[in-house]
Image (cartoon, rainbow over all chains, first blue to last red; front, side):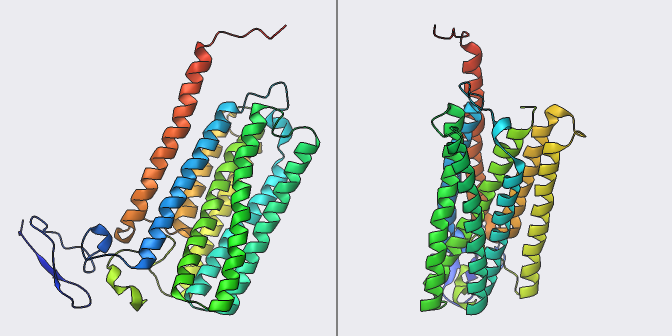
Length: 228
Length: 123
């Protein structure tokens, strides 16, 4: 133990007291998020705060997954998941959303480099693939409801429509947000607060893809195996 | 990014510390390739007869967890590096709560189903 250590900030500001008993110097100066050095920049605060919100969203989806898992066998004499789900359309939806997430990553890279053309192109591709995903999902829901297997048919179908429909609503909200981001990048340019908003949007979009990974695996694929 | 110099060792989720465009595009391409492979593996496991039947849902769940990890690392850039400590800790807490909710619900409801007497259908 070397007792009290004194560090200087990277900008050559006032010395920072690491306190007694702190004999490990943090790498690369000091890390604000670790309790020293004053408030973090808005980018870190905004990104971290939105990340915490997204985790709460994931917890909400966990409750819907739990409800679905508990109710999956309660079909009230209606159709089972094996009779309803077809891997074909799910594969197309999965491809749309995965490529959309990738295009969103490309938009992030273009926006970091303040390239208007490529940012707009990548965001347009992101949005079109997201809209294609929604189209396939709405068609599946329409065909289920049209055959009388809507959310009122059984507890299993109530839980299914709640879980998958809630994800679809998130994608719909994301598409509106994406259109807003395209307009703001176009009209206001790559200002700092616009880029912070876009950081939040890209986190939101990637997280929706993660939730879809859980849905297509645990609801659709496990639901079509005869072993459950 | 000189405007952020006073952040020291912290970056928000969704950011990569590296610089060149080629390296960053390559990261996303690796992520995409891994995600495609794991997706195909899931669809294969759901249809194959090569895996012992009751193990199929377990295999699909393993592929799902692996793919979610790939998305977290390659798309959301959540790592265990020192600049990501806060993001990784928040994620760990989220996973804990989600796990408690899902497995706790299944466990409790399974016990309730065991303890209930078989019901007579209404006449």
